[in-house]
Amino acid sequence: MLAERPLLFALQGTEHYATHVAQRLGCQLALHEECDYEDGEHKCRPLDPVNGREVVVFHALYGDGRQSANDKLCRLLFFCGALKDAGARHVQVVTPYLCYGRKDRRIQPQDPIITRYLAAMLEACGVDRLVSLEVHNPAAFDNAFRIPTWNVQCAQLFAEHFAGLVGDTEVVAVSPDTGGAKRAEQFRQALERRLGRPVGGALMEKHRDQATLTGTLLVGEVQGKIAIVVDDLISTGNTLIHAGRACQKAGAVRLFAAATHGLFTGGGDLIDNPLFEQIVICDSVPPFRQPPEWVTRHLHILDSSALIATLLAENGAFGVARISN
Image 1 (cartoon, rainbow, N blue to C red):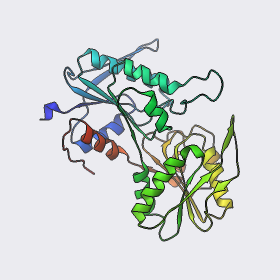
Image 2: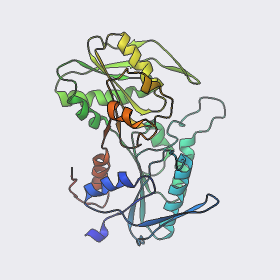
Image 3: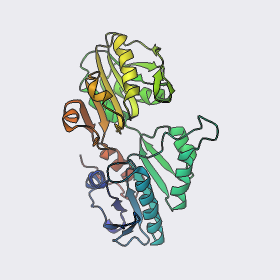
Image 4: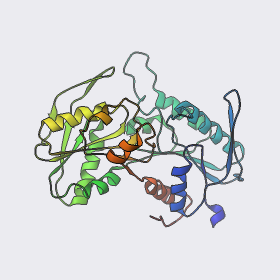
């Protein structure tokens, strides 16, 4: 019955993404209220009754011109707490982009492991399940939480896109560092299945000292091939450029880049550097920091809402809902 379906809420800034997911599930977003006060405090509350209901809350936790990642996280925590206080039976959070994903280990003495603190806060505010797109470190993500979590991977989505671009030329999937080797391998396998022919793999050496990247070793054959550099996110773009230049020097005939999250927090290196024929990202973070003309010419944005809708339909109370295209 429709009344037994989960209620879908989208906090400020994630309405567009959540609306796409709701449309695929054949439902509408539930109503809520967000109030901002003069001193910077705020209040969020559901307007539709949630007592005894399963609830899904959408919020992408990236900073923008209006709210920082911390602001958005605080709103999410308080809203989830309010839902539980109002009697919600089960609260599931969908974060297309999960903040602090790179703060997952100690690299210096007494470093914080913020992913673990983030997990503790979400659990303390009554979150029963968390879904996120392409987390930075899946193992750290799994270990940080005591509630069920899903890391939705985008390898198949990228494979479907690039299968239509590469033609008959040999292709190699390139990881820009050792930490992303498994991610690149998942993409390589997905593209290989989609093309029905072998796809190569390569790995770039990378060492980071503050903002400086070093490492020149490229393991794998890229000469005469199309090289697709695959990562989880683009921040400054330096990691992609580092790997792309190495592939170019090694004889790659065409260069592409793919990353789920396009943060684009750095300067104009990617804009000023015509290294990649196309950069492909998902819609978890709008590319608001980049000039519109550059976005139009060089960026291709993939719709990931079907991945989330399918997961909710298969694991939630949507039953056998038909996912619309």
